Structure formats: structure tokens, C-alpha cells
Image 1 (cartoon, rainbow, N blue to C red):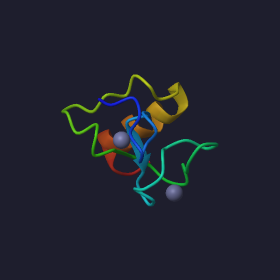
Image 2 (image 1 turned 135 degrees about the vertical axis):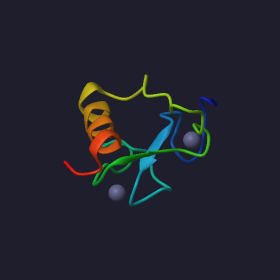
Image 3 (image 1 turned 90 degrees about the vertical axis):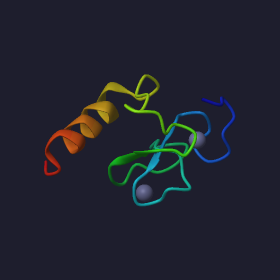
Image 4 (image 1 turned 120 degrees about the horizontal axis):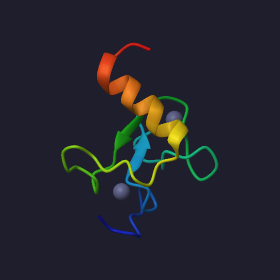
Length: 67
Ligand SMILES: [Zn+2]
Ligand SMILES: [Zn+2]
């Protein structure tokens, strides 16, 4: 993972609806679910940099598809 990704700013995640923005309420956009950035395409994606709240929504989305 790169620390200076121009898309996600090193977060490793982008907004699912706005894949050119970091998945972050303040620095980017978190209007929907998160999606792994192109710099974070390992399986499973690295969630270590996400807040617990965002990670929880991601895990919910990934496990059920509906929340
Ligand atoms: Zn990135
Ligand atoms: Zn968005």
C-alpha cells in the first residue's frame, strides 16, 4: 500500500459511489459504503486504517449485501 495515494490519500478505501474520493467524512466522501481503492486490492482488503464505525458498515455490507 502507498501512503500517498492521490485517490484515497493513503486510507486505502474510497466511497463506493464516488471512487475518486477517500472514504472519509471530512477528507473525502462516505455517503455510501466503502470500496477498496485501486491501491488496496489485496484480498481481503486492508481495513486497518478505517475507523471502527466505517469498518462495521463495510463488514455488514460485505457479509449480507443488505443492511
Ligand atoms: Zn488509494
Ligand atoms: Zn460518496
